[in-house]
Image (cartoon, rainbow, N blue to C red; front, top):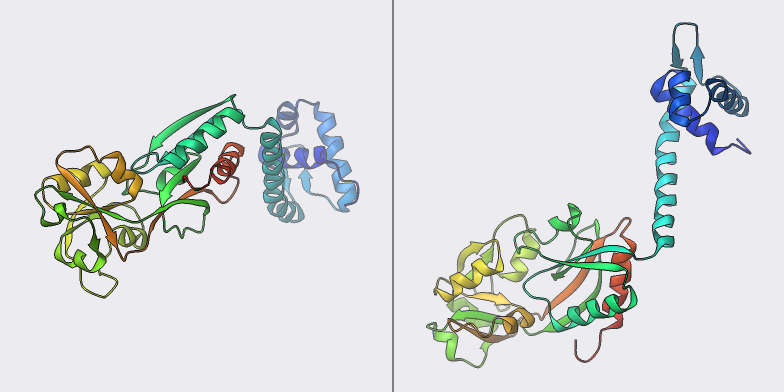
Length: 300
């Protein structure tokens, strides 16, 4: 196969689909005789016919069928690699769609500003992600990357950088007995109904945001389940349960008169992480990950 030309492979692939030299030539923008020439050259390199040609039909030989089965995925992978390189060469123009949960915290805001300063040709879109589906928008290609609450243990998603590590905060109604407290211990969660998360979020992720037991093993009463942050805050304000939040989200909603926000000691800190597809992340998402890393600091 030494010296094989990509045009010969393309001619064979198109012929295997069309099974007609004239139509294959039209697709390749060459003459029918040129298609025949490319195929003969490829068959000479291989040493056996790949297609059976009669006056009435064209069909693949058994060797042609086998060759096609191996060539198609390799050719598709080659084309994808070339497209990835072209995307990288074009840089970070276009659009970057950033998903977020709850609120855009100070660190994420600084990263967005850093990215915008360095890539002024790239438009930036901000998309709120429901708590009930933290990873779905990425998989559906609705966003290019997303800042989500940890933990993240999805095989098809790459995590990093991790940022915004803070003590967790409990949102309760101002009428709740905890509302006047300066802080709580994690064991006291056994004395309130904790609002959970419904939907398509993985169990490990839902249980991290609304634990079923305290660190000491006490059961935590289950409150109602919600799909969005606003649903959860509304239920908490109506004294239907309490909701654990990261500090940035609690701070964003601190002005709500119907809610109190109380730090909880003894739980793992909340952390945010930037998540993007593991396979072929966009150049824009890769550049934004650098922006998040570059803006990390004491103020994050």
